[in-house]
Each structure stands twice: as structure tokens, then as C-alpha cells.
Amino acid sequence: MSKFAHDNFAKNYLEGLLTTIGKTTPSRPIKSEVRAVDLWFERGSGSQEERSQLGLLADLLTKDSLIEVFRNPATAFEMRACKGKLYSLEGEFLRKAKREKQTLSQDQLPSLLILMPTASEEIRSGFGTVETNIPGVYSFPIEERSTLVVIHQLPNIPQTLWLRILGRSGNQKRAIDEFLQLPDKMPLYVSISEILADYRANLEANRKLTQEEEELIMNLSTAYLQKRSEWKEEGLQEGVYKVARNLLRQGMPIELVAQVTELTIDRVKELRDRL
Image (cartoon, rainbow, N blue to C red; front, side, top):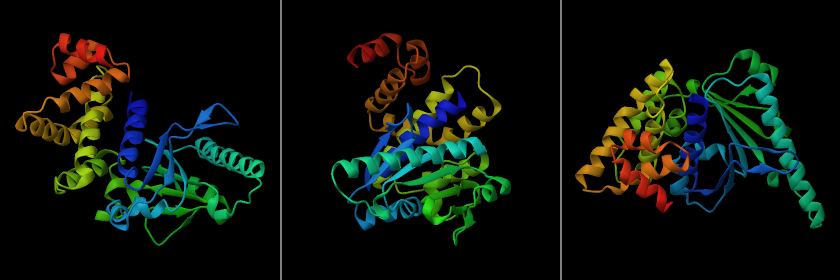
């Protein structure tokens, strides 16, 4: 459950953040093979203020990019697979330019951003990454147009908050606690708090939790309970309905959706029939 729940969360979370500064496409297919990237980001016309709200995440996405997110440290095979996706997509771009009789500059070719909690020195050196002036951010050789972010090495500053929420254990908990201290009027606050609440609901519905999943639920509990409190205070059931609809779309059984959201089975069936 961890891998799939985290994959869905990471895609929804990054999509919720990045739609303020561009266009995102989850699971974008790559034509050369039947495979997809975690998230495809196309830079849009977001204002400087909107980009500044995303801190380091926006600074790392200066052009159209593939984003690959790992819950656990990536293996050498997984790193090469990320590279393969970048090269396949580059070939797709070049073929399209040739058909249209255009020339692509280096700046028009896609980049790759890899996010993971930790990465061994062996992996980093094996792929030729070098440290940048930001702890936790490593660059590959320039022609590879790739960046590695080791989340647990990032400094605990506001500019890295959105990336640190994708960390693990205590690192993630501290980041979530920081997030909950943000002004609730902040444009991103509502959408991200709902995504965190959905993530917890997905995990809680799994009856065979690992110890890590149980810890993760505890990390997310404050955000989830705070969101539920807001729904109740405002007299809005729509927030609960939204969570239920999301879980139903992901194929969760009606009984589990009812258990997680505290809705009646009949109400959940009604929501399912309206999808």
C-alpha cells in the first residue's frame, strides 16, 4: 500500500502546487514504449509572486520537466529508468521538430527532476552528480539536463517546505507541522490540506498497515483532523463528500469509504452512482 498510496499522493500534491505556475499531466505516456513519467510539468505564465510561494520547487523547474518521485531511495536500475524516460521524450521532441521543419535549442528540450528522501554517496557518485550551493540539491553533467533532490538533506527553511513534505518519518512530520502554521488564507493552503487529508484517508482504509504507514497516519492526523474540524465548523459536508468521491474513483470498496469518511453506506452508494 505504501508505494501506491505515496505515488498517488505525490502526483496529486505536486499537481496541486504546480498548477499555480504551469500545466501538469500525471502519468504522461511516452510513445516509444508503454511507460509513463510520474508527472509532466509544462511551465506556464505564473507570476513571480506565485512562483515565489513555491520556493525551491519553482526555482528547480525553469523549463518543461519530467518529475520522478521516490518514497524510498532509488536503485541504480531505477535511476537509469528515469534517464531512459528523459531520452525517450527527447527523441519524441526531436522527431516532432523534424516533421515540422523546426530546430530545437537546448532550452527547449525537457529536463528531469528526481526527488527521493535519501541517496547514498555510491549512487550519487556513480551517476556523476555534484553538489550545488544548496544542500541536498545535486546536478548531473550539464548535457544530461537532470537534477537530483535528496529531501532529507535540505535545510529546514521556508523555501524548502513544499519539498520536505515529500520526505519520510520525522522529517515529513516536521514539514507538515510547519505547513499547518501557514496562514489559512494562503491560496495553496486549502488545496494542499485537502490533499493531505485524502492521503491519510487512503492509508487508514488499508487494514494491514506497516509500522511506517501507522507512523505516517500519525504524521498526517493533525492535518486531517484540522480539515475535518473546518468542514464541521463551516457546516459543509462537501469536503467529506469530496474525499469519498476521490476514494471511490480510486476503486476503494464502499464499506471502506463509509468507514473512513463516517458517511452511511447508502450515502456513499449515492455518491458512487453520481460519478
